Amino acid sequence: MNQRTQQADQSNKPKRIAFVQACWHKEIVDQCRVSFSSEIEQHGFNDGDIDYFEVPGSFEIPLHAMLLAKSGRYAAIVAAGFVVDGGIYRHEFVAETVIGGLMRVQLETEVPVISAVLTPQRFHDHDDHQKFFHEHFLVKGAEAAVACAATIGNLDRLRSSP
Image (cartoon, rainbow, N blue to C red; front, top):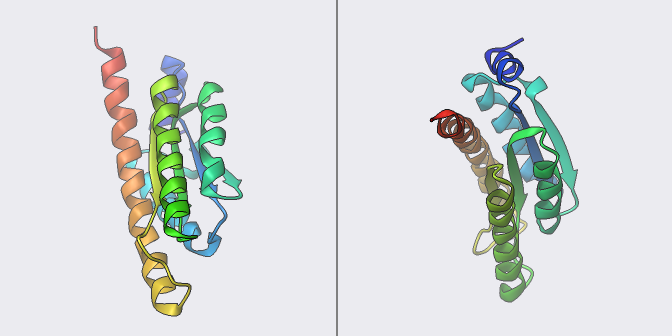
């Protein structure tokens, strides 16, 4: 039993993390999950503390996140996705809708949602862009893990303050 799990047993606060991943460009978004899993271990969590979920695309992440947040089982939710060009208006609409939905989830449920939903201005399905975003999602996964652990810790301190 790790330190976080012991704390959960003592305080009855959830210490699990939900990781919701879109499968659009899965081979790229998978790198975020891999990097997140590796980095979060450096912050007192282990792979057994994380539940992984897949949804078809980024548009489906906010509903999944809302249901997970309302379950009361999670201290935080991490969302990972890749919203790419499908025409400039569609791209912007989807990105704004997803990010706005994730913000609503955390404000309505008080369960933090860490976003690793990336929305590049332009993406071309050629080797250079594939390689760049493959590596970029590794960076973003580690950053999401750091943000997730820090946010859980900060909220724990805020909630336990008199």
